Amino acid sequence: MIIQNGDNSIRFYQFFVPIPATNHRNSCNQAMTAAADQHPWFGIEQEYTLLDMEGRPFGWPKNGYPGPQGPYYCGVGANKAYAREIVEAHYRACLYAGINVAGTNSEVLPGQWEYQVGPCEGISIGDQLWASRYILHRIAEEFGVCVTYDPKPVAGDWNGSGAHCNFSTKAMREENGIIHIEQAIDKLSKQHLRHIKAYDPRGGKDNERRLTGAHETSSIHDFSAGVANRGCSIRIPRQVADDKRGYLEDRRPSANADPYSVAEAIIRTVCLNE
Image (cartoon, rainbow, N blue to C red; front, side, top):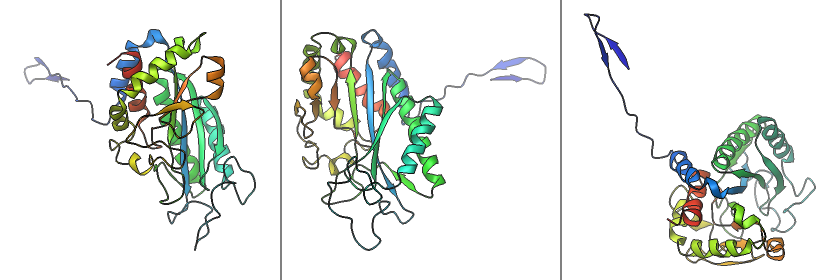
């Protein structure tokens, strides 16, 4: 800042503004820059739940519960898929905004939905996911509906909400990339606690309600990996195992995770060996 004195002399002041503790983009971008030659790709499956103005999942009966889980996942029909018009309006708005949204589907919990952002290279996964979340809130607002990214929006025998992170490097995507995928999983297995702390805003306190080992989750306390296994920490998709190249799916991040923190943790563990 420049200030002019009364005698017309000039004084120069330089102010250093600290980076807020919640700004994880800066450190994430540093990691992405260091690993740029490995061309890391990310895709995040963002789950969320729609709520009415009373805080109940949208479409649920006022004085009770809907039928058990089962027919709602990828379901069709007014008694199975609630507020699809919000989901499709959000999808179109994301496309208009230039967000690389890849698809949507209704989820296991009635009133719960998912959309996928990616593939995005490097820091753009965090930029695009944050923008898409904002757009979702604005779209839902037009319909008088609220959005929650709570990882366990309804206690009991109901699925929680995650933000599964699909990840690959150039080496993983090439022939015999399965070797590099397995090496990445081995590195991730040794840093389980670090990742649990990075995968929800409260260092695991939110996610512990979701990662119980039930409802298509692994236990928050243990690391596991497997092919086509939705109950593992890291899932290798069946097609990836058959092709022997592709990507891995980290199923641990909670729906309310900061994508910058998630992506940075993966990059530092897998690509930078930190």
